[in-house]
Image: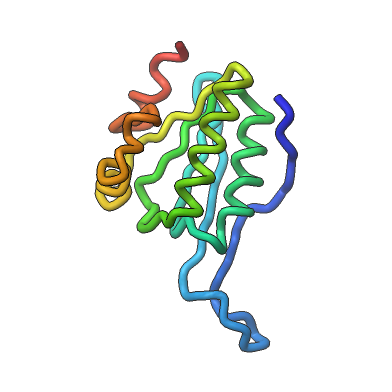
Length: 136
């Protein structure tokens, strides 16, 4: 797959020592391997400020495997930019013979996907175990 690799681990949007405000919330995405599947565990907010680092971490995950599970249990908010990123990654993965699955959604994120009817586009699983149990 033609994913670009970057070592960025954390998009931190707290105040820097210079006083520039980047918001109070941030995003962290940790990568793990489970049964030949890359697992990206996101924590924080997926929005305009964090989609760049989020894309980089998902690129890293797809470099390791064409099959990626994104765990969203600790994601408290996703804006339209974040939804666009998830759709783009999902569609690109499928076009290149892989897949992106969403697992363990925070109730607020689940409601957002239901409200926008995007739950029909994604493969959503209640747990990481359920998402990794079948590679088909």
